[in-house]
Image (cartoon, rainbow, N blue to C red; front, side, top):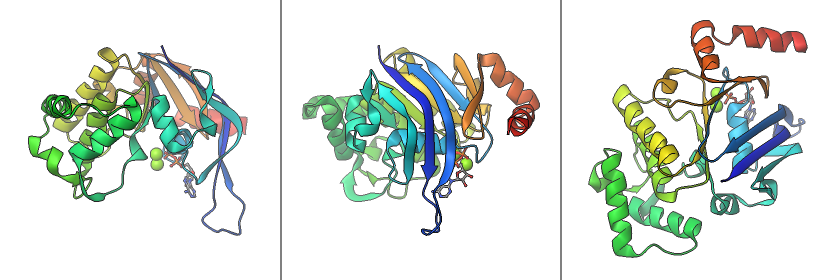
Length: 258
Ligand code: ADP
Ligand code: MG
Ligand code: MG
């Protein structure tokens, strides 16, 4: 069992005006995610949800000013981006770039080699990829295409979930995995996430603005995220409340708290 622990995390983002001071976005985030658990982070636009995922990913623009992130007691903040992946953290937007001339199949094998510590046997690998593609309803020719080149929004999301199934990380952070997906793609992507949870016993931090994806992926824990911190935690009923009443109650409470 793996544990991702975030304690009193404060994060600044570099100002676009280089002469101005960094802007404080995260104001004391506390969160613990274990293998086999699904946590949904739900919050309005601009509340700092993506800042949280970038900070976990180790994006250089996001400066952790205090607090800690550990995976099984190991200091994640001291790890390079690659080391975080090898330690078992999966950050969907870690690979958003286009890599012309590198096929998906080769790219994924390289990633799997890094995470597993040895290259999967080629024949075995081909079979693994084929099965994963079938499960996700992805055309077999996908493996021959260049990484992210000309991928539609939906294809990029499927690609993320394909990686999830092949790399089998310990904890996955999925930021707005539902955005831009039609209903069919949403179903397939959600099934992939659920398989990762049930079959691979993965821990999931599902970051989202909308409640729509929660019809397909059932979190045991829901956290309302406002003003750079978790303002309320609960079970699935909290998501139902958000679906009915929106974020207003929480944004007002956060405002009066100052
Ligand atoms: P969310 O994902 O919840 O919509 P973000 O983490 O993207 O929120 O953004 C939180 C706040 O931080 C917003 O006010 C946004 O404008 C600001 N912000 C995020 N990234 C940057 C950046 N690279 N430069 C300047 N401001 C940023
Ligand atoms: Mg946003
Ligand atoms: Mg965001």
